[in-house]
Every structure is written in structure tokens, then in C-alpha cells.
Image: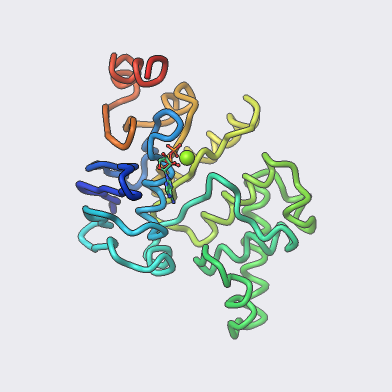
Amino acid sequence: MSSLRIENACKYFGGLKAVDGINMTVPAGRITGLIGPNGAGKSTVVNMISGVYSLTRGEVYLDDQQLTRLHVDEVARRGIARTFQNIRLLPEESVLDNVVIGYFRKQQSGVMASLMGLPVALAETRRLREQAWELLGRFGIQKYADYEAGSLPYGHQRRVEMARSIAAAPRIVMLDEPVAGMNEVESAEMAEIFEDLARSGMGLLLIEHNVAFVSRLCSQVYVLDSGRMIAEGPPETVTRDPKVIEAYIGG
Ligand code: ADP
Ligand code: MG
């Protein structure tokens, strides 16, 4: 079983220590939580792992492979997927095409250009579209397949973004506040999907503000505050930790 690790990792923006010497493991087949107040550095961690930000110090590994200095596209090709806290869909493309694009493991600019330029056989295209169609069903948005992605309500755009991120069956997926703006029922639907994905062997890093949601789903929870890991362990221990309570209500 593979696992993603980040070791002694730092990201400084000038004098700001956004992430300051953290260690974290995201194993396959489990849901690992990363929580912490606003500005704690959670999204920065995702950007460091996925290659969007270079590390000031430290290393990222997938099993024994170094990912630390790889290009963002190469990290994606190695099986590390992510969603963005601020949704990044191609708003004028259809919902279905947005998911199809996920199969190409490109999450940066130039996606459409590279897609159009690829000599993809017709049969292959049809197969990818069928798979994308099934994924839309799993996320409950099949009926919007032909809609422009940008025309969907926010919660549904999040679903499209998640479907796209897992389209290429990554080994690890990092979900940056995936249920933000969703109600209880919708969050519960997403929770079921996350558990299914973990059962299928995928490793999930779930970044969330909602501690109760994370506690229900995660085997291991990490708590980040001002760039430092202040607690880690099973949710029932972590949520009772005075340092964690202080970070959330005090500060
Ligand atoms: P979180 O996701 O936990 O809310 P972030 O990782 O977005 O926190 O941000 C952590 C800190 O790093 C914040 O103070 C934020 O302003 C800062 N930060 C994040 N990205 C950048 C950047 N590209 N340039 C400068 N500062 C940044
Ligand atoms: Mg964030």
C-alpha cells in the first residue's frame, strides 16, 4: 500500500512562515484529516505537495519516490490529485468535458490546448466519455452533463471538481474544503463517496473546517495552527486536546 509523506516541510513567503517544519503521512485506503483555523497553512500544504509551490525546506515522498522538486504535471502523473479551495473548472466547457479532462492528469493552464492537440482515437474518446458519465452519476450530477460548468450552483461545481480530480484514478487525492457551502444532506452524500474511494484503496487527505465532519470520517487527524502541527492522532484524542480547543476558540 502506498503512502504520501511530507517531511520537515517549510514554506516561507518572505518573512511569513506559512508552513514551518511539518511532518504528515497520508496512507492509501484511509481518510486522513487536516484541520486548523483560517490561515493555518492547510491550502499551502496541498500546494506544496502538488508542486504548485516549491518547498523552502523539506521533502515530499510517494513511497520511496521523491516528489519534492517535480513539476506540477509530473506530480499529477505519479498519481497525486487535488481539488482547489477556489474551484477551477473550465466554466464555458460542459460538465462532462470538465471531467473528461481529468483523465489527462493535467490540472494546470493549457489543459484544453493539450487536450485538443492529443491524437486521441475516437474509440478512446468514447470510452473516456462513458467513464466520465458514470462518475457524474456517482456524484449525482449526471443530468447536468451538458450544462456549462460555470452555470451550476456552487455546491454542484464542487462535485464536478471532485469528479474531475479522481477521474484518472489517482493513488492519493487531496480535497481542499470539499463540502464548503454544502448542507448536511449533501455533505453526507459526499462522505459516502469518500468512504467508497478509501475502500477502493485510494488515500484521501481531507481538509476541512468542520471538525465534526472530519471526526466521523478520518482514522488520523492532523491539526495545523500558524504553520505548525500542534496535534495529530485519532479524532477522539485530537478533538479533546487543549491546544486544539485553544487554537479554535482562543487564538
Ligand atoms: P488555510 O488554507 O489554512 O486557510 P493558507 O495555506 O491559505 O491557509 O494560508 C496560510 C498563510 O500563508 C496565510 O497567512 C496566507 O496569507 C499565506 N499565503 C498563502 N499563499 C500565499 C502566497 N502565494 N503568497 C503570500 N502569502 C501566502
Ligand atoms: Mg485554505
